[in-house]
Structures are given as C-alpha cells and as structure tokens.
Image (cartoon, rainbow, N blue to C red; front, side, top):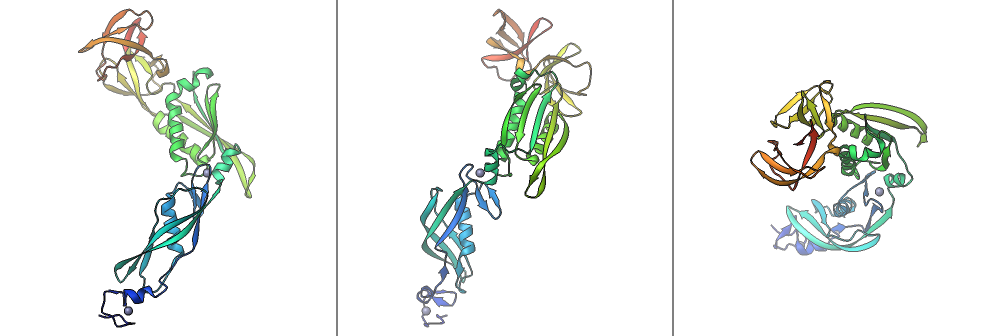
Length: 339
Ligand SMILES: [Zn+2]
Ligand SMILES: [Zn+2]
C-alpha cells in the first residue's frame, strides 16, 4: 500500500500519507462558538430549552456540529478542557480527534468560546413574582401560628422536591411561601410542578386534592389560568402518637385508605382504616417532649421527667435500637412513655 498522491510507503491514513494528509484543509472549524448562560440559575440554552448542562460537553457538541471536514475524515469529535464559564470570550485550545481510515488523528486548535449572559424565562418570571398555581397545604386542627412546625415534615418534603426539579423543569420555582390561617401556602411557577407535588402528597401522606382554576389573562396569545390546589392532609400525620384501646402507637405511614400504626409496646405494625373512630390523638409529632436519658439497661430506660425532673424508669420500645442523650416521650394516662 502506498500513498495515492506521492507514492510514499509510510503509514497511511485512509489513502494518504501523513504529509499529504496534512497538506489538505482537513478540519475547517469555526473561529468561535457561543453559549448562552442564565446569570441567575446558571442554566444553558440548548436546542430550544434552558437546562442544567455541563457547558464543556455542550461546547464540544456545538463544535462537532459546526466543524466541516475533508472527505478523508470519517468522523470527528472535540475534546475541550475545563474553563471558567464567565461572561466574555475565552481562547481555549481544543483538541479535534478525527477518525481517518479507522485511526485516530489528533489536532490542537484554538477556538474562541463566547459566553453570553442573560436571564432565562424561568428566572425572569420568578423575579417578576410570576406563579401559575397556589398550593394550599392544610390539616384540620392546625393553628396558624404553629403551621410551620406542625407541618414541618410535609413542608420539608415540598421544599426538597422543588429543589430537586429546579433547573430541569421550566418555571420549577417557588415565588413565595409561608404560613396562613390553617396551614401553608405555596406560590408555584409551574402548574405541572404544583400538580406533581399534590400527587406526592396524596401518595405519601394520604392527602385529598381539590383543584380549581380561573382565567387571569393572556400570555403569548393563549388563555392564562391560575390554579388553586387544595391539599388536605389527614388528621393523623407521620410520627404522631395515637391511642387505640388504651394502647399507644406511633403513626408509621399514612395513605388514603390505610393508616399504619407501630405499637410502642411491641414494635409491631398494624394497618387500619384512617377513619376508625377508636383512634384517639395523643400528641402531634411536633409536640413530643424530649426527656434526658440518665441510664438504660435492657428493656428499661431511666429518664428525667421533662416537667418535674424526677427520675423515672420506663420501658424501652423494641424499635428503639439506639438510645441517644434524649428520647422522645409523651404523657398518657398520667405516665410517661418513650415513643
Ligand atoms: Zn503522500
Ligand atoms: Zn435562569
């Protein structure tokens, strides 16, 4: 085998020797490429959407698309080193890796990578107090001043969920949230996100959902609706302590049809209907007291009564594998119980 142009018998790349190959205009790369970045959330614009992207990967993909190659080259891709994604043009030495006749052929080229900075539609809506839905989280019997404490578990869940979607879902932000009489309100940028949260509250916490909407105007030629989603939590929440036939249970899980109760004395789980009228509330999770542990051995724990600081010996629930410096307690039937 010899080079079809000069007849050299050196190693061939396709049908040409290295020297003849290099004399060709092999790689015709753009002198610069542009990336658009949101200065608020740091997302990048990519094929019609703003996303949480690896900008180096995105830059190499754009460069792949915009590079024209000589017909000797079977395929090409770019390796771009890490660079600081700040506004302006960055001169970056990038490596083109071309495949010619099954062999890799590498070439370093300096490319200008321009980062343009603007605000993505999601962030500009957030900054203008935009919202598509109000999610109303409610539980019967919650006093407004305590709502944030009494609904702490559910509230944390909602905030975590919004966080996990921010950057992937358009308008996945909270415009504002806070305590209102009877619960918490969340002003949510995206109706899709609001419905998702409501569905999670139904699955994980047995909430009932009511939706309503009203037209509030037009946007981009389309009717704009604002939704109200009422998420009503069942009276017994996860972690609450209840009594049934004078025995104590901790609410282990709640769904629409089943309330799972964990026996404080035996550690066993019992499933029952959330509507069973024999279930009596003893203490909300947020109202459990903490008692200082004096000592413990086997099934017994000595604790300080948090109200009069007398030492009392109580039973250690079988599910309490590790005893910390304090344990959660309730007073029921005039006695303290570790739960
Ligand atoms: Zn040659
Ligand atoms: Zn943004």
